[in-house]
Image (tube, rainbow over all chains, first blue to last red; front, top):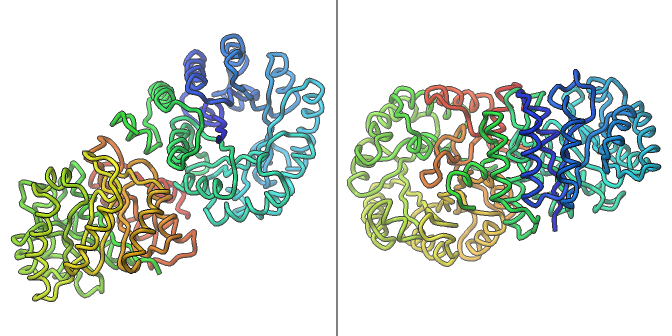
Length: 300
Length: 300
């Protein structure tokens, strides 16, 4: 069984130009939960002016909590700092995700902090989360490459991953934030990671900016990875390559996994319908070639 | 060194709605040749009413012969029958491509002949081509799956490939015509093929209809394949899945190959410019995610 962490409502929608109605986002999340996805990242508790796409975090999460919490699905939320954590906690969030990167240039531009400073912020949050019995997942951005520093050394990835596990996260999601990872690099970085950490605690988070995501996932599977982040319909984009693709599409990942005989528990018809709905609201086509063919033929 | 057979001007453009001016096609082919591609399929000598996109075959090939024949590039043309062959020969074509399939339903719908009958037609052509010292390449369509018969048994592929080699083709291009091949199947079919035939005489021809082409190429490389067909910019479409993707994009293949440290002799800037030009004439965006990112950032 392969676990997919659906990040479309958060990582996807936060990189879309259109700002959707809360009700549409909720319908989307509800449809995703109904499709069999077991972990759906709902939103991000950031300051509204920073990311207007996430400005309705409180309202959206409250609705998810009221209406979907008995579905057995996890609904993690991104939390950038202690203030965001306090809000999330009050609303009843049971799992949070924290993020850092391997590149100081990236974290500075992104969250105005060095990597070390980001760990100070995360430590404050994790200390509270432990007391509150809230699960914490860690993201490492720019694991393979950074828009400012280029290819990132695997040693930085190992070091940041180690610090995240020491902090107390239950899983580290290794992010190819700008979609520059290539299969050879993915294989060698995973081999380095699994010599240090249990592979079951590692997730891969690929962006399909250069069309390499599925091949990178194929290689990750060969190396034993069992958790992948993806975005329904391939929502999102890449702020560092205008007009380029965002997260790998959940449908593409599903198609590869089922072709390898790997179960995900996802009902593809329901998932495709969820994507079709939200893409309609955004008024844009999908970036998933499989989804295009599936919606056109009605067949896998 | 990996050999790429560029099929954009033929397999790509014949599946585009727009019918381009001969001069535009020539500019495209000229730019492709200048980019370092060593084999470019120019056109198809079919009856004009059957495929209006190829109606200017004579004029286009004549121009290619006059202006590009000293470039050291091969310019094969598709030939469906003896009549097409005679035309091609008169115009000075030095290499032809013939096609059949593993599925009778497919050849019947496509060329109104069973697979056996297609071999009778091909035999007439190959006998002449041998006398004329014209090289012959063979295509096997529906090698993995057929829109009418579903998944195709590897035994049919072995049998058709064997008959093509017996006929006298120098290479067999194994075609995933409708883009249904999956990595596991690709690996097992190539293993079956290479137990019967020299792997250096086999090419893989993937369509990216379901986004699986690059992963299938990755697996093909692992199995030792060194020749791939592709289409600049991902031109073309799939007549069996409306709105879906056609041939795998040459740029995507290039990106995967160079990421694996494999040389193709292609200048990516020139190739991307050739694609940008022809996509402009067609008035449509590329299906290649790598090309989108490359044109957006100007960087690999």
